[in-house]
Image (cartoon, rainbow, N blue to C red):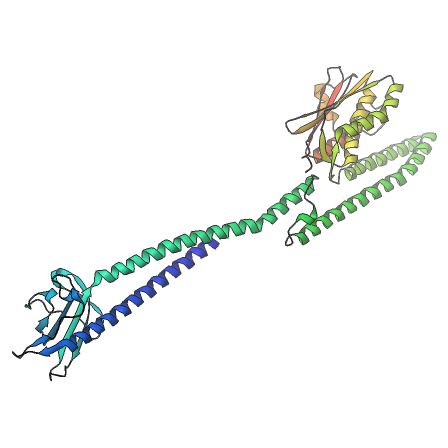
Length: 431
């Protein structure tokens, strides 16, 4: 739109300049022709034969040059009395007819277009009104206007292109902070490192501060909601345990019904807690190796008591963007699940490739049949009802992994058991 207005204003300016120049040239031409008419009248006098002559030649020599198209003429009632040498001797077809007192176009000798001025004047030496005509070639005026028009168009086109380029640069420069702000918000959403707030220009700084305050406010709300959900779960878990113990000591259908309803409440509570766990987005860059090592130390004793060894192979620089607690939840659930089913060995390996950090957890247990893979990750599915839990662990893992744009896959391990692989996007390196 700015370019259109710029072109429109330049076009209007060009038309105005050309019109003003043409008006100036026309006014100057009229003044010049008028002065030549006055000079012609002042030089005209009667001769001894009762006709007229000029005391001297016109000051401009072009009137005396043959075929120069600079002409003057004196006539009366359509009869040519005297004319310039450039017109040759008077003849029947040499009368220069033009409007009186107004510059106008007339046809000169040899079909040349002339610009002339005619005035009817009664000289001091005569009682009769004579017509004095002076004319010059029109092409010279038209050529001057054309040259001026070309120069104006070239200059204004260059000026317009410069204005458009300058406007484009100003718009680009002026809007760059907004583009940077959009990228900054995207980095904030992904939890990546971003420029410090003080580095923003003064025009954008208030908006950036408000966005940062909004982020902090949302984080506080999420943290508070999670805390309240955890407190609620803790408050409900104890009464549920008491009710279960009471139900187990009772006999009859009522006791069975009580235990069944207690299990339903416990399962529903677990599902809603899982939703709360995945309701927040992490904002930190977390080293996967550090999390695996911490979990290795936490689970080693438990696994050793079962006669299970835990092997770990970690890739350097495996960093993902997520909530640190969520990553502990993901890897911890996978390692805990592998420990439940392993016969003697659990292996954890991290690799980096194609912009992904892959976390592989495998065991040498009974494994999972290919037809059971889809149901294995469903909420509430339990491969063995004798194992404790509600079948929510891997479901929570899948929801968390999906939340962070990752993929959870299951296949058979080379060790004979199950192999669960979590792939998460590699975090951008901090500046």
